[in-house]
Image (cartoon, rainbow, N blue to C red):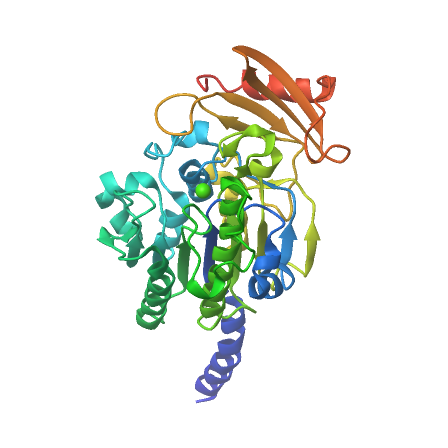
Length: 400
Ligand SMILES: [Ca+2]
């Protein structure tokens, strides 16, 4: 009897201890905007207050290949695109999307709404095992007529309501006994950038004489107001004080700066994107100017989940405990859209050295972003960045 009582007391004592020892897996929410340029939080007051100010903003976040699909491929693999096979928008991943694969192994309930990889349309079966809920843009008819799983949206600006409907559906039907991951990747503010009716002309988008690209920039800002209200809806579903919330843009955009429009170039407005992470347990409120990247998100989250990140061979780092001197940035000439030129660059916190083609010749351009944020005055390449450049591109064979 004495032994039984002793055992019962011990068992009673152990219950709370075991409860503490067993770490609860965090829910994870990704919000990935599309072609959003930095310094535009002012169009998203809710997001700014509840993710950017309540979490940590990473002002030096660089996208290693600044194009929609390569950027997402790097997020889900933690790899440079020379290592995951997605150099253009329609390439397929040559490796597993380790983010989803590992969360699956950990019995997460996983949902995705919006863009995934463009190759989804041609290899859907590959993706099904990773998700419990999918409403993916297949984009067979392009961006002027978006869809969810091939079901077309009648009017472009109905998409805001559809996003809300699918967000409700995911959260209302999820298996609450499991941790979840929710991947929300809307076509916002990506062109054609059609705002919700209530936001039309909020930034004067239709003023005459402003030009096509300025009009697109303003309409994009107006669409971000609609995205902000969707983020507000997501916050009614989640537990912001305990969940990991990542907000990042897949790439920036040029609205005629440097005489260019679009992406997949080394200019800072394209590669340096808005990013903030809220995870109250680990990150304080603040601003970090550490040099970080889309390739760092999966390694960082895995680290927070207690995984040994060395076993994964990531190119990315754990952004809390590790740091780097420079990042490799690259765009490939070749098949498909937005691949007219090849370029390579090394990016430090304050400088970039790029090898680009000008008038059919390769030239090196270096810029000091502190003295010349608009990148109007190319400098003679410095020895330090040339050393990084040679080291990086010499040591990665087969990447041309
Ligand atoms: Ca994009």
